[in-house]
Image (cartoon, rainbow, N blue to C red; front, side, top):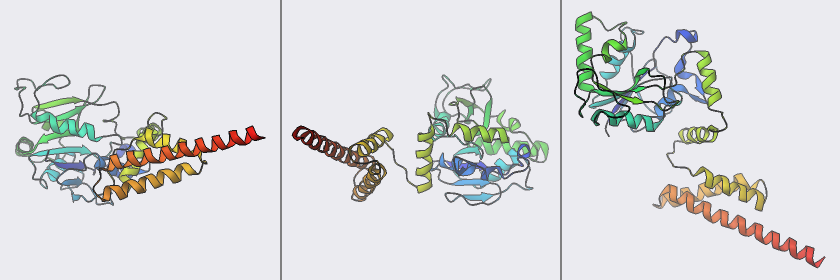
Length: 305
């Protein structure tokens, strides 16, 4: 699915005391980089805000004058895009995931159904103006949305003609005139960091026992620039077998060697995920044989004694 992405990163962050919100970190990574991770396959990614270091290349622009509000910022970003479909995101979504992004991008061509509401008086057939996320409390999130570029440009132009400026206009003035599907948010996908308490909550959530490994693996893959499905259970089982059957330090060394072997296999044309699975299986079998041999030797020595 071909699309461009616009990330709004130029807000004043008044409830954060004017802090550089997109640069604040959750799980050791900047909020902006986390949002960029959710749309890696965008044909072009435009960030509306001041330039800063990012994990991957983006195009930069600003509304004129800076600080003109979300509609003006969206217009500035839209002027730098050419795709028929644009993904629009705010830069403070630490838990936005690719699955949510895919659902938003697919919705404008899907008929209305569970979790999707047609605008009053509008046809619910395919070919809608876009889709926005609706958070678990029922609030619409126009900055977590996918829009068709043509109707978005049309409505922005109408607003500019009506008001003489886009500065200070609320997003609802724009979205109210569009036929948008609503996609029900996963629990954390729409969580944003508007206050210091929000930031602290996000940092606490990312370390919760039930999600810390998934969050850590995702962060490491992003940091290393790799996109690979990781069978966490298989690797943890391998580490356990190496630690118990050989020696505790064997666990990290063995998983490192498995990764190296899988990368070598992938370089020769093998599927990366299958290469990891095969290398893990071989190493786990070896660890179990090692442990069985040690147990047999110990039993023999105890019997002969």
